[in-house]
Image 1 (spheres, rainbow, N blue to C red):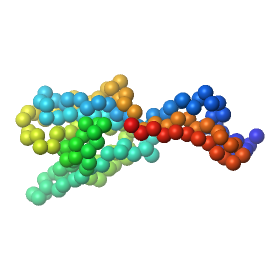
Image 2 (tube, rainbow, N blue to C red):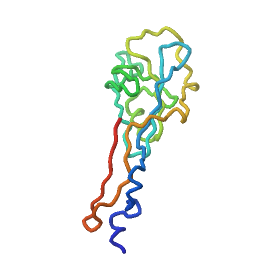
Image 3 (tube, rainbow, N blue to C red):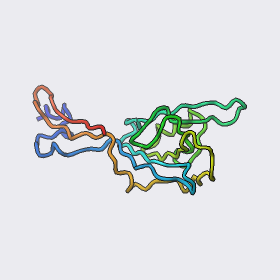
Image 4 (cartoon, rainbow, N blue to C red):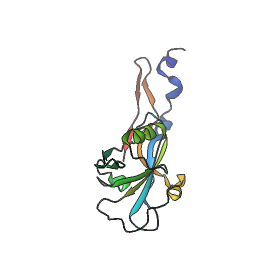
Amino acid sequence: SDEGSAYGNDQLSDNEDEDDEVLVLLKHSRAMKAGPSGDFFMVRIVRASLDQPFGVRFDATESRNGGPTSVSAAEDYPYLSVRRRDRLVSLNGKQLRHPADITEALQQALSITLVFQRRGNQFHGPQPRLSDCWVPMAEVNRPLLSVTRASVINRKRGEFKLAMHRT
């Protein structure tokens, strides 16, 4: 019947056994050391869709002498080992110093590798080579946001259920 297709029946399940099927919308790696000194670390975040936000925000502080803008984490993200005001060194291997560039990069990527310098750490060692700062996909195994497959509750009323899980 055409009634089921009006509710996207191809995406819904009538089978109760499929309730455990989970779609991970957002996942991340553990924080990993970046570079030869302990001053820098990196983390990778992967999303299932460009419509799913990465869930990280940044603050930008313009230099008084017209130099590059300093970009830092806007809040604590303990699941990423990121603290508020940790300095963003690079995003996907590039030093992006202008807020518009960062916004554009975040909007266009399904996967981001962020390199940070811990706030308050004075520069003690060489900055890591950006070409060496990447996190293998195999390390991106910690779900942040997931949903179960939708299952039909009442087809006539268009009711379905799904569960969202945030860790």
